[in-house]
Image (cartoon, rainbow, N blue to C red):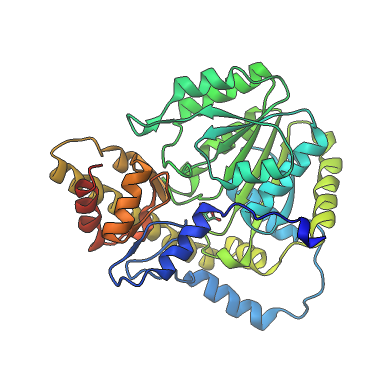
Length: 394
Ligand code: LMR
């Protein structure tokens, strides 16, 4: 049987992680995988997570199973964090999942069960694991234009034109904030236009929000998804706690299905629990419990928000410094978009050959499509990167 297996294509992000590890150069710079790093290159455990873990260690008396959809307190806390007061709690079915990827996978399975003829529309570009999972599940997909390479911003006319070709019942996958890989985001008026188009055409939004708090702040980053959830008849949402709580390896995510028709809530919730049971039974609890402890305790929450804000402002500073260093070296504004982008990533707009030159000649690692993880920089490496960008002819 095993002889039938074929080699699988390597995941480009994870492959680059390994190449970076294997590079013996001391001055190499990792702008690859989307993991936050502080100025010393460490990915720290957040203070509130450490404190909550200590409390949990003292207080936890059992490791018996939770519910199939996870701990209800986690669902309540996450629905409030992502959706605020945009919808009522009993409009949202929610189930804990292993990370944001688990939520995407479960969301896609839900879509396949409920809308077997739907095509999923993906931004071009998008996180490479989106099309990979969709293809694996055998769901048809199409791309809509999203990024304008010339301006480094959103090709909004192209996006609307392409989505205009969807058929009623299709699904539109949108990034809630901090678009991965480009860093270029929709403005609120643009969200409103996309909502109007989806309403007119009978499309259903699937919002992936993995970086809430990394862009313009916890509330602003959720403004688009909240508008969608309150105005569309139905919205699917995959949210991740990996980045904003820094608990990557705990695999903490949540799938939400929002419906204006409250009569559907019970059966939707039962389907989310069913899907968990089919795939892994009970979702992981440790990270989810820490998240709900933090979100429901005033002191822990205040400390978490303060640290998250430090992280966000640090990344914004790095962006601004890189943009101004590039302006100085190039004598032009052509890299100004780096200061406009939000979140962990920016797409530089370099060719694959130029990305390869950066790696080979300067030990600078970014994804082949020239996605950079801004958090991989620090005050010392910003000028080194800027210099290498100019020397590589970008
Ligand atoms: C990324 O885009 O680098 C992260 O979301 C990590 C991953 O799993 O790809």
